[in-house]
Image 1 (cartoon, rainbow, N blue to C red):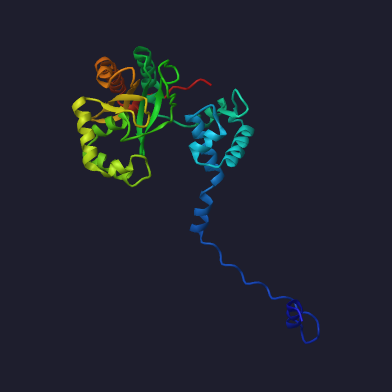
Image 2: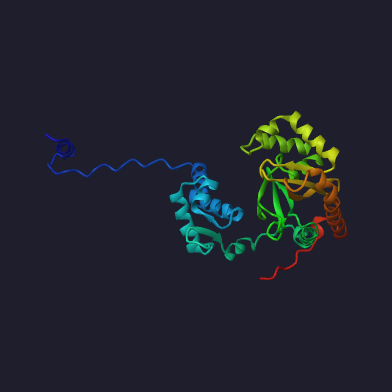
Length: 303
C-alpha cells in the first residue's frame, strides 16, 4: 500500500470519516535584531551605487571596463546599467557600448550640506591656482580611511592625463595628499588613522603596519616641506602637496600633478611649491576672517 493511503488511514475517525488535519505548530518569530540586520542590506542597491561610483571616476566607460572596476559580472553590470538608464541617471555615450552619467546625478546631492568653506572659499582659489600653474591640482580632505578629492582642475587642465573627478578616494599612504596630511597631525590622531588603515583592506594596509617605514616617509615629508609621490598608483605621474592648516592641524591638503617624463620632483618643487603654499595661505586667511570653517555662510546654489 502506498504511503499516501497509510497517511489517510491514520487520520480516520471512529465514524469512518476523515478527521481534519491537526493545525501546524506556529513558527517561532524571528528575533527583531536578526530581522533588522537582514533588512538593512539590499545587494542590488549596493551594486547600483558601485556602478555610479565607477562612472564618476571613469565616465564614458564600457560595460567590460565597469565590470573590471567593480568586480561585478558583466551580465549584472548590463542589468544595472539598464535600470540606471531607465531611471535617467545613465545614458549611452558616443557609441552604444559606452556609458556616461547624466546631469540627473547632480540632483542626488541637492540635499547634501557640504562644508561651505570648501565651496565658497577653496573652490575659487583652486580654480585660480589651476589657471596659474596649468598642471592639474586638487584639494582634498580626510574621510574615514582616505583622502577625498573635493575640488579639482583635472577637467580643465590641458596637462592632465588621469581626469580624476571630485569624490575620488585617494589612498592616504600612497599619495602626496595623504602624506602631507599625516605629517602635520598630532601623534595620537595619526596613530588612530594608521591603526584603522592597517586593519582594513585598503591598498596601503601592509605599509600602515610597518611603522618604521611610515615614520621614514613622514620624516622625508617634513624635511622636504611637502608631501610627495613618484609613480605608484599613477605610474606616469608624480605629485607634491601642502596642507591647509586651521588651529594647528590640517583640515585639507592641496596638490599638483605632473608628468614624470616632463619634470623632476625637484624642478616641480622649485617652480610650483611657492604657488601651492600661497594658495593654502590664502584659504587659511579667508577662514580666519570668517571665524573658521564653521563661520562661512552657505550661499544658495543656482539651479
